[in-house]
Image (tube, rainbow, N blue to C red; front, side, top):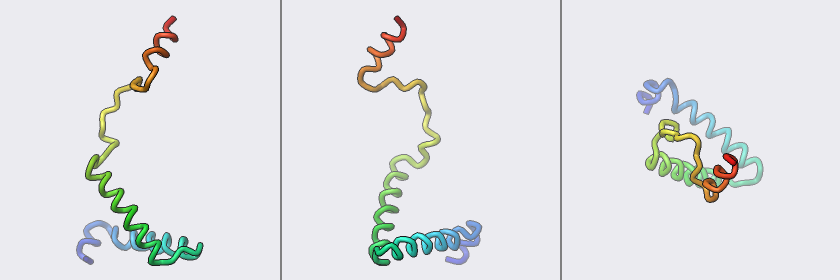
Length: 81
């Protein structure tokens, strides 16, 4: 584990420190430590699923303008008149 962390510029230690702060923050607000950790695991699982569906949404092509909402055709026709 230490080797992996060193390759990533100390990413493990940095994330660990941030997670400790988050756990402490919510535990001090009355949420149990185990509950905070379990909730974090659920959140991370949700994020991982989203990443697997679309690894980098920022790389998606954006077609501007987006007029695919209901009524867009009527509105754009009215503004042309």
